[in-house]
Picture 1: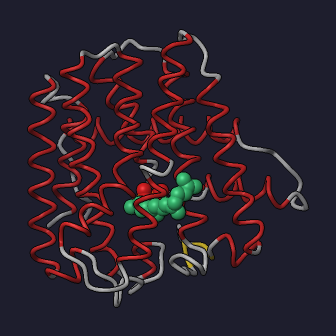
Picture 2 (picture 1 turned 30 degrees about the vertical axis):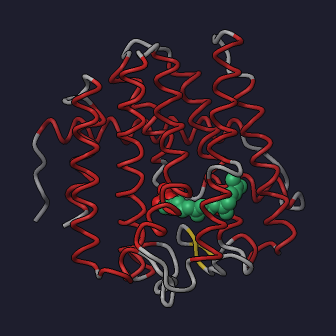
Length: 300
Ligand code: GRG
């Protein structure tokens, strides 16, 4: 029997669907349209547009709707595309034999298996460069704000962000490590693009320092919950997750250290903290708060 959704939930799902389509249409405009013999252009396009959740651009767009609903969509969409390209670039690398050695991503064979390791690395670098170019040329924003946006993206991506988190995970995660070390690697590898998304929205929306601080706290807590849900999905079939199953065997994650039940409790705690940050930011009953409900449902 078909599930009947309450009308507010239905409205929100329609909003999410519309925003996702707008992100994909904008991504499609930014990504190279090229013949199949242009392998770099092809992986940039196919790898980024392959079906994914688009959670990072959605966070930006929903945060901006909560902060300043009347704000023009195009600059936010462009920044969302930059975030999604950095994310896709990181997935190309994460899947490579020297990292997670994955075979399946977003329901398809991984980029290096389809196109070779050289193309995966070069495509990733090309996507990163493209993302920074987009952030640096967003229209209708003053120079100082644009510089700040680029700096935020740099910090999220580089040696104090995704790169550091990935390194820690690769070099410490294959043996036993304390829970705090797992949490620290998760904080670095997954949260920076979440916090960049809401900070982009805060900058565009002219949010106060107080509000920005709590948005940052919200995104960090959500990122931590998101990573735990990703780890929990390691036990799902490839049909459900679109990824290889059992990649975390022998690795130290919250799930392997504490078991799935305790990991789910951690998810709930992070989501509760995230909700409190939204209340403290003054947007406790907006779009981001509704989004949290979806993660709460997934944690059970
Ligand atoms: C900045 C290019 C670059 C590399 C930095 C490889 C690397 C170093 C970082 C990878 C970090 C990483 C894979 C973190 C995991 C984050 C995560 C939960 C990924 C899954 O994200 P989803 O679920 O995926 O949003 P979809 O496919 O839905 O987009």
